[in-house]
Amino acid sequence: MSGHSKWANIKHRKAAQDAKRGNLFQKLVRAIIIAAKEGGGDPGMNMRLKTAIERAKAVSVPQDNITRAIKRGTGELGDVTYEELLYEAYGPSGIAVLVSVLTDNRNRTTPEIRALLTRNGGQMGESGSVAWMFDRRGVVEVKGEGLDEDALMTCGLDAGMTDMEPSGEGYTLYCEPPELDALQAALEKAGYVVENAEVSMLAKTPVEVSEVEAARKAARLIDVLEEHDDVQNVYSNLDIPDEVAAQLDAE
Image (tube, rainbow, N blue to C red):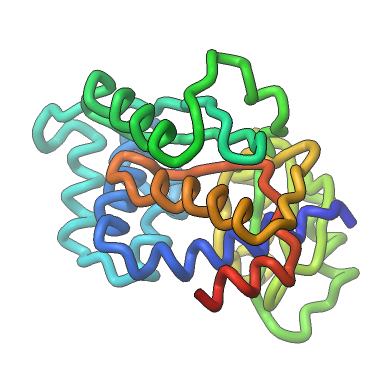
């Protein structure tokens, strides 16, 4: 319905790659800390925390690590303070890039992100320079075989969904960010398996990069940014055609 399927497919490919990275545990633990800090330590009352915990468990983060992260977020352990930052940048082939980070030291993180951009064909932008190219949306991924599309759509619309499309082994539902928790809760109450729920930045106008070498450079920038310990998410308007993406995946 919405034409965001390329975004969903890229997210799925990136998730599979991220699962192999040694810093994934650290990223997920930080997400739990922030969620607990903002909404409290009870996942039954804090959907962001619930989702962060489920994502951590899905890749076998030890329960002790999860428990300590929650306590750290609620202030029961230590006084390390993380802040969320959003860097705006330009990449190869003129793509727009948003880099979401959690850091305990912005004076360390900012020059490191700037250096990664510079070394990989990008450059840091001013505040507001590229953010306007994206829409902030709630995204819920529902997984399952043989799902009744009409029933799922009805359930979603009743809970604030604005759009829905097939994606992978299920469907991706979109909503306004304030409706994300209610939509996720309604879907789970109805018995649907919610694979992921998050507020994301969706490109308004994708930039197609169909030349293989140019696509490789753009994808490389996104990869090295995501590998940074403090980076939680990288959003871009990069659109790599399927046949080019297949060549890159095979490398």
